[in-house]
Amino acid sequence: MPHEAGRRGGPGLDERAVLLVAGLADLTVSTLGSAVGTIQGLLRRSDAAELAAEAEHDLVARGRLVLDRYAAVPPAHLEILAPHALARRAADDV
Image (cartoon, rainbow, N blue to C red; front, side):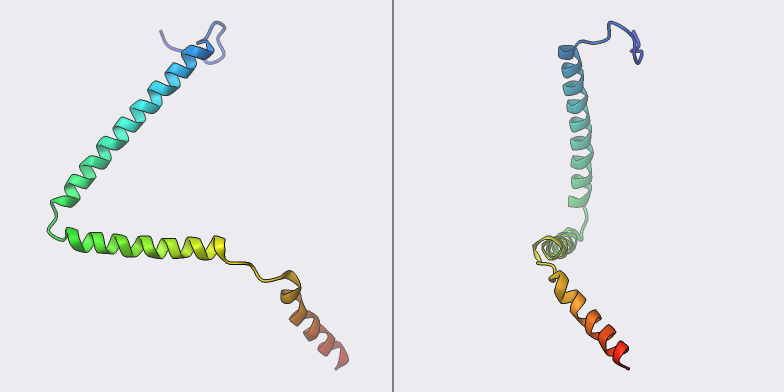
C-alpha cells in the first residue's frame, strides 16, 4: 500500500523510526558495497603505491588548509584599521 503524504492514520512514531533505521541501513550497505568495489579496483592497479602516496600528499595538504583556516588567530580588528586611519590622516594633511 503506497504511503500518501498527509493522510490520516499514517505510520506511528515507532513505525516511522523503524522505517528510518531500515532506510539508513540500506543506504549504508549500498554505500559500503560501492566503496568495496572501488577499493578492489584500486588494489588491482599496478600504480597503487603511487596512488596511495598521492592520496597521502593530498590529505596532508587538506589537513594543513583546515588547520590554517580554523587554528590561525585572525588579525586584530584595530590592527587592520590602523594603516587605513594613518593613510586617511596623511591624505587629509596634504
